[in-house]
Amino acid sequence: MIRATEETEGLGVPRVPVGEWIEEAFGWLNANLSGLFGLIRDTVNALTDGLGSLLNAPDALIMVLLFTALAWYLRNWKLALLSAVMMIFVISMDMWEPAMQTLAMIAVAAALALIIAIPLGILAAKNDRVSNVVRPIMDLMQTMPAFVWLVPVVMLFSIGMTAGVVATFIFCLPPGVRFTELGIRQVDSEVVEAGQAFGTPPGQILWRIQLPLAMPTIMAGINQVIMLALSMAVIAGFVGAGGLGGEVARAISSLDIGLGFEAGLSVVVLAIYLDRVTAAIGGTSPGTGRLARALRRRREAAEGSDDE
Image (cartoon, rainbow, N blue to C red; front, side, top):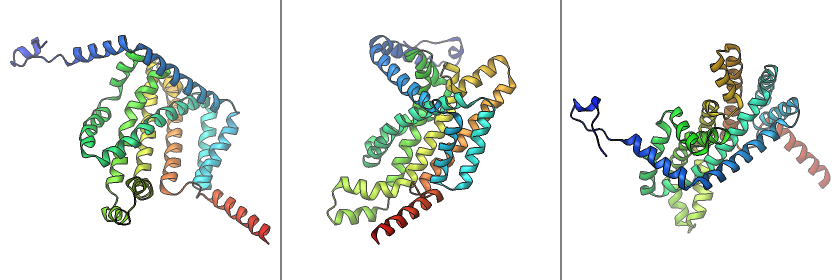
């Protein structure tokens, strides 16, 4: 199966038909596991369409209020005000519906990635053999050009939302694994040994010592997963995933510079909002924003009055 080509004959190097092998492997998967891929396609489509419909069901201004309240709850009024201004800016460009479609796509892909990434990162941190196997796979997934992943997913899932979600899932998975493993490995060994000395079971050491101490690093990984999901979700518009990526693809095909900038600025708004919100969750405990503290003080005052 190794043959020489005109390019390699002069150098005396035989050609290794890696491309043909990969094509045959994907052809076999498509022929023998089409039922499984159909089930995945239907599930992903149902999740993404359902979440997208949910985000687009209320009036856009109501959703802006909800996003603003979340920013205020997690951080402060400055982030809330910035969020409100940015979201209204997206509405003014008639990009709200595709922005919510992109947000739904990011949410599904990132959630699926984290469901796999965090347990896999924990396992890699606990077992060096698993880490040695996982690391080169993560290197391949993260360093492969993003557009390359569109080819196999389109072959397996056809053009549409599922292909975009799967490609996004593949591209954004590695940071979740890497940061989870790094966070757990960086936990002070003396703290772990102290827990073991008191007879704490391994499961309790993981849940009560290692994961809480590693949480800032894990949250940084979650932030990276979401950011990479957003970048890939835009590229996935070229395979019919829709959303803002679809608008970018349409702008490129028609050389519509105005549409391109409107879609691009909407992507920037989503990126800033998601980055600030996830950073607020990672930097503090959820519910430590000024609004959350004010609500907590009011509740405590009400409870004190009832006790009297």
